[in-house]
Amino acid sequence: MNNFPYEVMQERQDALERLDLRVHWGQYEIRVLRFHLTTFPPGKIVSFHKHAEFEFHFIPRGKGTVIIEDEPYALREGMFYLTGPNVLHYQEADLKEPMEELCLHVDIINLAEQETDQGKGLPLVDPWEASEAKDCMEQLGSLPLKPTMDTHRAMPYFLEAYQASQHKFAGLYTTIKHCIIQILLRAVRAYASEPMEAELPSRDMKAYRYQLALEYIHANSSGEVVLEDVAEKLHISSRQLQRIFKEQAGGHSFSEVLENVRLEAVCRRLVETNWPIDKIALHEGFSSGSYLHTVFRKRYGFTPSTYRKMNARA
Image 1 (spheres, helix red, strand yellow):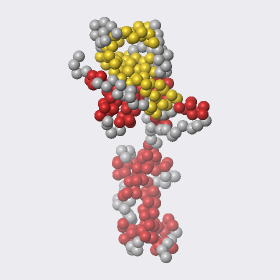
Image 2: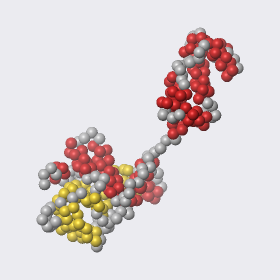
Image 3: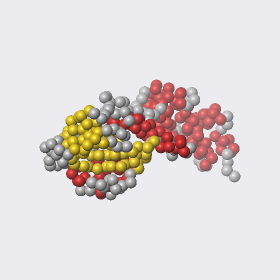
Image 4: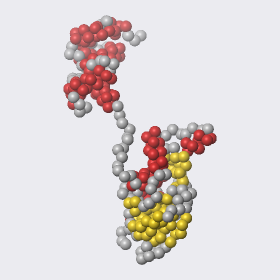
């Protein structure tokens, strides 16, 4: 009976319920009605009743019985069950020992339906969060009406929310909001027959690697930049990187893109400084002024000196 971590929640049983908690998650508003730890003395009976909201029941200690609709189930430490809106249920503690219960009652409002009825638009929400919230709410409405084990440890979030409210943590409201969402998510997961592969936001890896390579080229274009070195930094082969450049750079090769970056830098130097051509060439990654002259004229049809005169500032 010692070292019961939730004992502290007995000190102010209504601490969380004093807060007007309306958590927005995706397109839903979760209105918290009850959020507390309660104790059933030995033999305590709560006769058949139902609620208009979702009620999450977690058993952190003790044992007892629940009857959901007309099916009886034994309860023991570590279990939980959900009684959705208008689900008839009966609760009874063991005759010889008390049973603790962590309760969360929430009313879940689909704001998308309300806003549609009123002809208003929803505020901008993260599409991934909205999708996960919708999936969770849909599953809540179809979970089995029987207890299961709290395999994903939703119970500690009751205590975290309580401690946040009592110690006035920085980010108090956000902490409690996340605790409520975690309780809902972990309750749903506990009923999953097998783990599902998470569908997280993914990158277009070719575009991502191309962007990283470009950033590296821009940052190092004045020095030695070699395809093999850049490929190694991206943990891919030089052949794979060359293919990425051909696809992402409009058919241009790695060396052509590198040359373009260097010539753009040369053009800026020609306009913004009075440096000699040889100095600009060496500073921007060309082996000599004469080589820059050849490359520049081939690309633009005139010499670096002519470009400088054409773009001279008044």
